[in-house]
Image: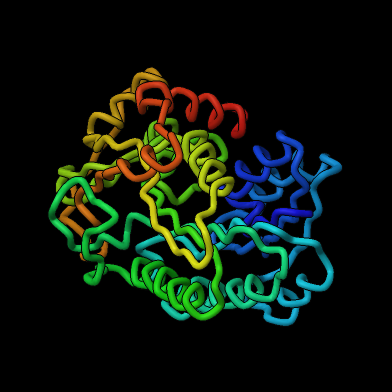
Length: 321
């Protein structure tokens, strides 16, 4: 049997696929090489995966109903890790149709595939800390209300959670949604803050800090996210079940302190320009991970002080600096 990993050329998806292959699983990876950022990075992530005999790759779009539903007849899939999505909070204001098509319709197609797989043990999918939206209480907990999203991206991720709840009820599935918090690490996306900080400090260009720099994020190292994702995948609840968990470092970091770690790693100071807040941006994120620790024995291990130098090391190597 195979594990289907969507978004296999993406940041988290490539790391998850690698970890699954390392423990001897057969992985079917799917990606459409979206040009939201340079696909060259995606091809580079995918290259070592394709060298593993246990890995099969299909270039396809999760919104392609015919291609996705055909997988039910073409491949013996017993688990799904659905990570493909259109990311980026601010870009969702620019192209809202893309976000609804990829994140909502694409998720619906994957649920339709899941219910057609007779041997499916578990459907695990990526949600986001963005669903907490305008919530002020910190840290964010799974049982907090999430009906006030402040970005279209967040609304699409909450829609995914609701669609999954419905499908679990109707089709007696076993599904788990994971609310990831600011994932960073080697092979990270160029549109995310760690890559932006590294690039700006290296090039000597300004870093725009919104909310006048009063921003906190729960930075979570990708290895911890992978470990948590696999721990969840391996422990489905009895059907029908739909569970939600926060996966995060469970520590909110001041953005200025994080930049200092980048300055130390590069040996040079950052140029910072303070900007007012954007309406779609959350000012602070912090996660309560009590449930994930209780149910899976999972705890994050890599601190931001350890993770940032690792990311910078990869950044320099990848960009041949």
